[in-house]
Image (cartoon, rainbow, N blue to C red; front, side, top):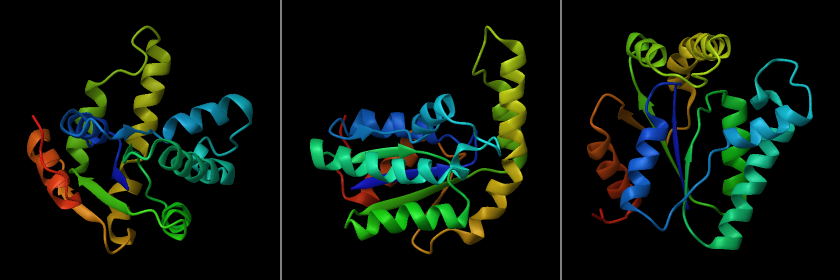
Length: 181
C-alpha cells in the first residue's frame, strides 16, 4: 500500500508524513522528489521541472514497486503531483502492478501557502538559492490550487490548516491503521 500525500508546496505534506510515521513506524517514507534531485544531477532538465522527465515518472514507479517488493512495508509518499497526465501515468502504473494507492490532497488557501513558503528556508547559508527556491514554489501555487478539479475521483481532500495530529488520525483511520502512541 502507498499513502500518497499531495498538495501545493507549503501545504504540510512532509509535516503530515512525519506525523503519520510517528504513529505508523512500520511504514517507509519515500520522497519521490529525491529521485528528481538525482536525475537533475545527471541530465539536463530543460523545463526546470524534473517531473517533466518521463524517466522521473518511470523511476518513481519503479522505486516504489521495488521498495514494496523488497521490504513488504507500506509507503508514505509526500509529493506534489498535479499534472493530470503525470498523475495518470504514475497512479495508473501502480494500479496496473496491483498496488493500492490512497491519495490524499492537502487543501490550503493560496495566501496561506505563500506565507508558509516565505517563512521557510531550504538553503539558510545560501540566501540567493533560498530566495530562488521560495519564488519557484510560490510560482507553482496557482497550478496546484486549480489542479484540485482534475485529480482522480478517489482523491481524499483534507483541510491542510487543521492540526497535523488530527490529519494523521483521519488518514490512518481511512487507510485502516489503528493510531499508535
